[in-house]
Image 1 (cartoon, helix red, strand yellow):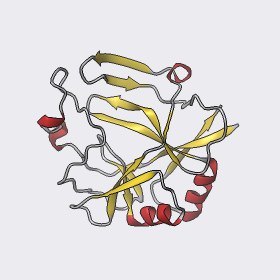
Image 2: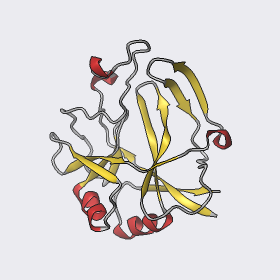
Image 3: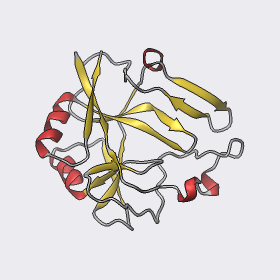
Image 4: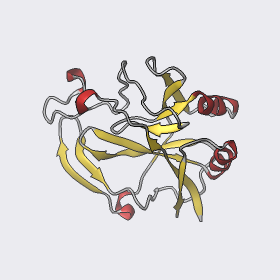
Length: 183
């Protein structure tokens, strides 16, 4: 039974972190890795503007004005948009509804834990995606409690309910990729 969909986007040919390095005030004093994965570079400029939902190579998710207007129209209250000043018409997307990822069933690997920032250097293995929740997700946007990736290039998985996926498909947004989550 499909309980929701993993929402992936295309790479937009840009980096949120300048030179792959976070600002010094956002680095862990022990391991040196980014400790705020909601960071938005105030000078970030998206290079490939053809997608309604996309990702920089490192951190964050970016949506178009069309995508934002859809979410407002559908009254999705658990998502936040932060305008990207150097990329007019595009926004960083955050969701505040967190869902637990089942790292055991998914075979996730964690390497080099830092006891200061409580971050791992790598969190790898999110396919297949399993959640601890086993019932169909309500209409809306969710994010995993874990962030996946390596070093400073990490993101949570964005997940939508079955009904949300159907609405998004009807809108014919560019760049969206849906992967079913079974339980």
